[in-house]
Image 1 (cartoon, rainbow, N blue to C red):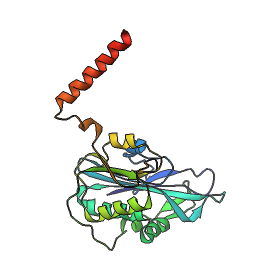
Image 2: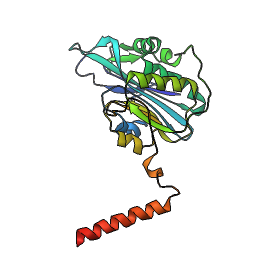
Image 3: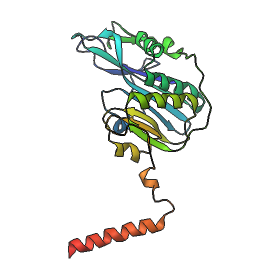
Image 4: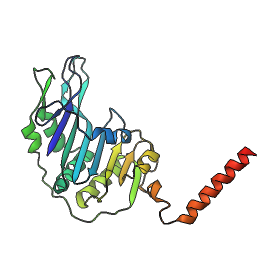
Length: 238
């Protein structure tokens, strides 16, 4: 399993940097594929899949112990990249992050410490790698229906419960996205299985179909749309 941590040091020359669990300065390769699905520099939790590889991304965890030279809180972000067999563990981590569980947050917080090196911080990888959770992930089959809602405490808790009990659907790309200001159309077009955004006003789950799938098996609807568009164009020309 690959693990990446982003943090910074105390002084101005200690900018935010990604570090892999072999202590190499490498950005997680998955970042570019999820950037448009999250609000930058804001808390977010994302689960995604490519082939047999699962990724959990947790952004902007506030450090309780570390501040920069101006007294501003330092934020830590983490990425786990693992094989499908590790899905139960990643689901439990995601649920813990969504609930902001003390055990999860404290392990992460004490694993990233100030250090006198070029980065200004050091990661105690053993503590993160040995992170364990007392509960066991459920193995119920997932509800395949795609749903979106407001990033609220109520829906966040419901999503965490669903991750506790149910497997992830076997789909490619982003599966779970919990973020700040991202519009619902972007999340729907990406076909995210479960998404929560602060820009969505719906206080309960809203079911939807991925837009490009709406006309599968419906040739008459496609022809009707083409005809309507052509008539519109002719009217504009005339």
